[in-house]
Length: 308
Ligand code: URA
Image 1 (cartoon, helix red, strand yellow):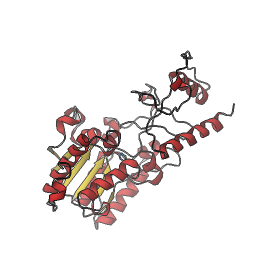
Image 2 (spheres, rainbow, N blue to C red):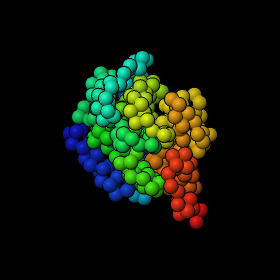
Image 3 (cartoon, rainbow, N blue to C red):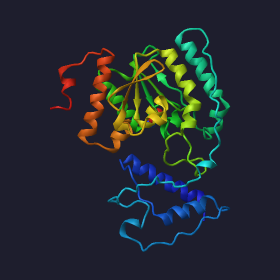
Image 4 (cartoon, protein in one colour):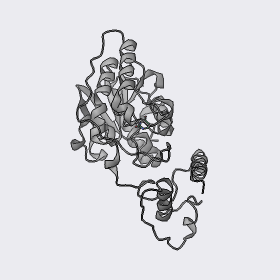
């Protein structure tokens, strides 16, 4: 069997479905075991008995979609198989100069960082935050995803498109804010399909800790009025993972990081998965607080967005 050809066909089909708006696919345990055997022929992967085929499990995808699996698509407990991260975070002193020159120096340092280089996958890019160097509002996500590691820019995939709409809702353009991430590379999954990675995982505290000096350097360059932490992982990276138990406990309130006010709110990808008016209203309430603190003009229409 030409495994590579079959896997590429599978990827094509996944991308086609994604382009058509599908967000979930069903994969049986038996199919997963076959995939594992196919990509790691030298590894002994236990056979999983084929269950009797239910109508929705006859193919990897089956419209209408069966209940969403609770587990990530690629399952392996081999977190320890990932390359290790040094406990010591890099030390970097920003050079003197104007903001652009300092940002360029930082970018050179991040791109040349041997740990970052070791983790970024072949033909993929590291991602440093970007935007307006005089921005008042600094959005901080967790880590690049599939589109970001291809383009080398933060928030350019579906979550990024929603973030752009949120920023516009605040009466700003994307070019007026700064957008960064705690992490500079896409956290790799333990299983890699010959250079293709499916799915994302949140970065570990150790990974975030390693990249944090680079985020701090960006804050030092931009000197924003405030930070918006997008999601529990970004909040944990900034505020300390031990202090973040659930997002519900900390969102919508002001916290502090490096002397800067931090508003914690939902990650746009959460809103993409939960398109309820309730979640949209909650994120909007948080953004109204950001607008107030940043002293941005707020129209009556903006105030009443989700009340009407
Ligand atoms: N999610 C993030 O947290 N950051 C990105 O850059 C993209 C998606």
